Image (cartoon, rainbow, N blue to C red; front, side):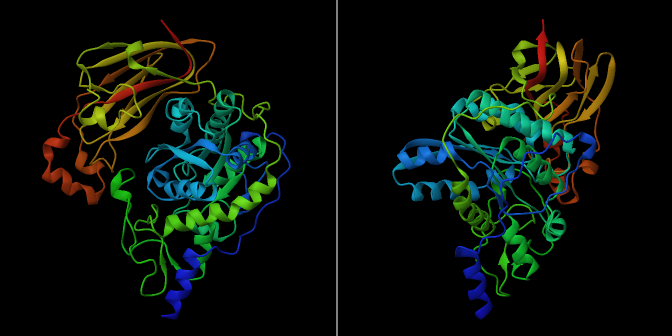
Amino acid sequence: MKPIVIALTLLLAPLVPLATAEPAPKPAAVKPSLFPPERTAVECTPRAGLPNFFAKAAKGGEFKVAYLGGSITAQPGWRVKSLAWLNARYPQSKFSEINAAIGGTGSDLGVLRIEHDVLNAKPDLLFVEFAVNDGGAAPEEIVKSMEGIVRKTWKALPACDICFVYTFTTASLPELKTGKFNRSAATMEVVADDYDIPTIHMGLEAVRLESEGKLLMKAPEAKVENVAGDVLNVEAKLVVNPDGKIPFSKDGVHPYTDTGHQLYLNAIVRSIPAILKASAEAKPHGLPAPRDPANYENTQMLDLDQVQKKGPWTRLPADTGLGKTFAARINSLWKAEPGAELAFKFKGTAARIYDLLGPDCGYIEVTVDGKATRLRRIDGYCTYARLALAGIAGGLDGSRVHAITIKVLGEALAKEQILFEHNRDDLAKNPKKYSATNWYPGALFLQGELVK
């Protein structure tokens, strides 16, 4: 029984703080060719703290905390626990949440939807969590997105404080065990340096426990079967396994809500004193010159009513089916069947479509200034529909007007080969669910201006 008692204490009690970095001097602009940066992994870098938020909390009142992230934030874990902790710590204040987390999405979508999902609700504090889902993104793109998130927020709400938080998976565990941040977190640190934003790596204590043989990262033989949805919300039930190890997650990515997420909360709680100490005078945030002038601060979200549509289009009702499922994220969701076309012109550098990946989806053909490519809107996880981002045009000449046409193709796909092996049984049992090749777009994102 002795190992179980030790491990239980490690999980539930306040732990010895990990290394906390001193506020870093602002670096000179880093050229994209110098990425990815290398950064020593520390649990908390307080920088300029959260002065506006803590000043408000101490005085009392009603405040909003926004959580922008992926599936790990969407789970009822560190997000729910941190909000409850704030309410307990500051009984004179009342904190409510803005849950802006979408599973399987990264900062590239986060920066595009931030007005709709976060800023319109006027938060007092914004947590940003994208280190896991940005793991495969190019550092230059991470900078553009994360810098865009910061600049959009402080343009609209200069008194809103921001904190970047990092999570981890079994894939990033080996690098973290060497004492270095993984690439996405290290890149985000560069943006945090520029804007004096505090950062917390919520997983370093779990990394230490795993290294010492006191934590089990994933259940034996378990796989990542879903990247969104309530199915991810699993409790360990046993806070400590019979072998004395803390079970962190089932799939190596999404923490158990009562163990792995508790470790994430503990990291926040340990970091608060240093962040409080670094928080000086409450005042509106200013904006320095951007690190990347081409960052995504100047993007807009447009309803598809504003572009030309031909063929079999149906606006889905917001009170039933897929329209209801995603109504909180997209003002109007459309079903476009094979043969449907969408066309528009814009002056700018990039265009993207907010849409769904799903079992009854197929290919779309995107033509940009006469050059055609195809995008597939189903992947290995697609036994269900989930929100996604289709990058239809990028790196364009911003001084020119560009013509874009999107057509829904009717060609059949070998979906049994697309689905992950563990999902193929669903296709065999429900072939009708996969038989169509539709497209479900919801909004247009432009870095530029629509031209009528």
